[in-house]
Length: 108
Image: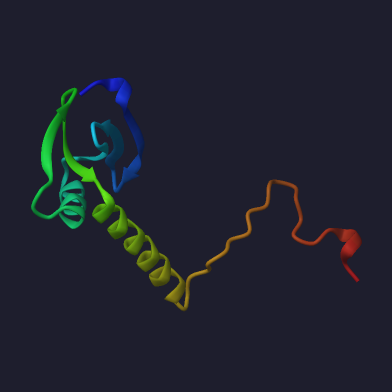
């Protein structure tokens, strides 16, 4: 695998996830950990293969239309699960230090 083709996107529970260009689009590379194995099996139960990148083993999932549709469904489902929780705040207000929620001039 050529290092220049790989783009790390982030981590999931300490598991590195990225993408790499392939001849027919791109592959999703998921670090070979317990979490990575579960994610790779969710996305591509039978066809995920392992590849070596440096000294690290990754699951390679071909990102095709079927996988893309599954990703969209998962995103929508996860958003719905979060919004359905009655006790979690969905929008948090983050103020920088010294900033007030209501400016003094706006108070009655």
